[in-house]
Amino acid sequence: MHETAYPGPAGLASARSAHVASRAYRPASANRQAIEERVRATIRHRGIDPRRDAAFLANIVGETLSTFNDESVRGEHAALADTESVRSHLISQLSGYGPLQKFFDDPQVEEIWINAPDKIFVARSGVSTRIDLTMTEDEIHTLVERMLYASGRRLDLSTPFVDAQLPTGERLHVAIPDITARHWAINIRKYTVRARQLSDLVNVQMLEEAQADYLSAAMSAGRNILVSGSTGAGKTTLLRALLGGIATTERLISAEEVFELGIDLPDVVAMQTRPPSLEGRGAVTLRDLVRESLRMRPDRIVIGEVRGAEAFDLLVALNAGIPGACTIHANSAREALTKLEILPLLAGENITPNFVTPTVAATINLVIHVSRAASGQRKVAQILEVMGLGPDGSILTRAVS
Image (cartoon, rainbow, N blue to C red; front, side):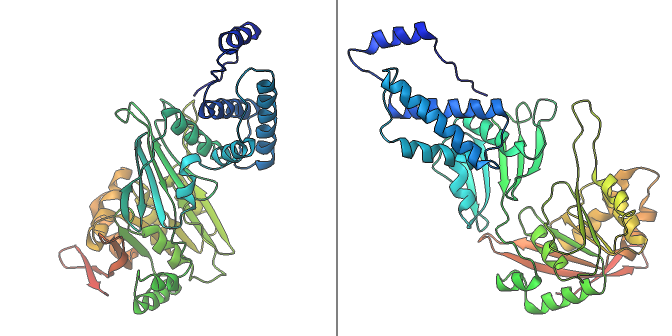
């Protein structure tokens, strides 16, 4: 964090005497930086969120510019050449996401990540590009602090990772040294394909119309669905579209690490995990959320992504007859089933494969695998129907497409 130090009267007099003859004032860029630092200091002092209180920000910027111009009249520094352009720059810099704002506004950009101040990348349609932009460490830190302000999540040496949803819906992940080697590592995932229905995915050629009809019928019938794929393949996008087709009379309970699904149905309770407090208390895990969801009269349960022991709680819920759906990170539909046989074992509690494998075979009806080509095109690559257990105790499947 940087703080602005203001010179006292003696310092100002000394500065005026040193430069009065040559008028060697600091350049315009330095003036702009000095004003920005003053505005940032005021924002921190008053504890406002400039993204949510635009009118308050405009007042602070106006007051700071007025004071700065009064100082220039007294000869304390050079006058601003264009006050209005500085005003516009400051409001854009402080109420938006600074030099990254244009990438937030670009509908073709789906992800932004920063490896170092001079190593900033974006992905457009699944293809990554290093952009011609360099930020300072302070700019990056201030930007992250502003992003986290509204989320209530913290980032410090005791919590060197953070996942959060931005007010505008993007997902933010940050890791800091000494977990990272030197610089803050930042990923911002936008959701450029806001598909609400399977027909939306047909329109962008992510799946075929026959597949959409089949999956729509499966959801209406209350079948339990596992969506698999690699990072950025479109798992969440497909899950959201699948849920968009269920009956509006259903009560749906969702559990996520960070809110991403944004399910648009009349009767939805969306829940997300919570990290522990500074005292190490108050954490809420996915396991907690899945267990609590069973007490909330669900017609259907959804988990954003299963990655650990919560897979056991999901199987228990599905085995109780509550329809559900979730995503899982895997390289194929078959691998997704294998992974779902392994993850519940992490719950301990005397869980054995003799329980898990038959339960997976009995509760999971379909596995939909999505993939992303080198061109960035996302596709439903495979749909497997689970047929139960074979004579050797392994899970039998049938390829639907």
